[in-house]
Amino acid sequence: MCVELPEECQAGGASSIVVTDEIETTLEQVNFKVNQSITPRRDEGADEWTVNASAGDCEDYVLAKRHQLIGLGLPPSALRIAYVKTRSQEGHAILVVKTPGEDLVLDNLNSTVEALDDSGYRIISMSGPDPLVWS
Image (cartoon, rainbow, N blue to C red; front, side, top):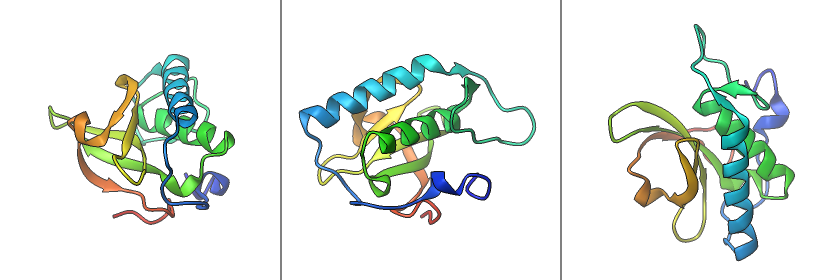
């Protein structure tokens, strides 16, 4: 995806954000809005990552949320893409918002934003402040 859409893979700004009431509301609204706007659909064949999908899988939700939050002024370096295992050991992608305290999860399987520690997910790999570098 970063080869085809390099503008979606830019780093920049603070690597974590302080979550104010306004930012919390923004996170909740974007999470809910994107979850409602994309119809769930598994990729057939090659895994495709799309920014403004009308139908897609977990990565498409993550990219749409990241794109919208950056457009609303949140720093790209604080918005991390994570590959996780669910409680049932399925692979899944989520958006993690890095904060000085609890990191937050925006997820297409949950209509509310929650703390990563409360999500039940086990991180396998996550992008760093530079989305091209994963750990």
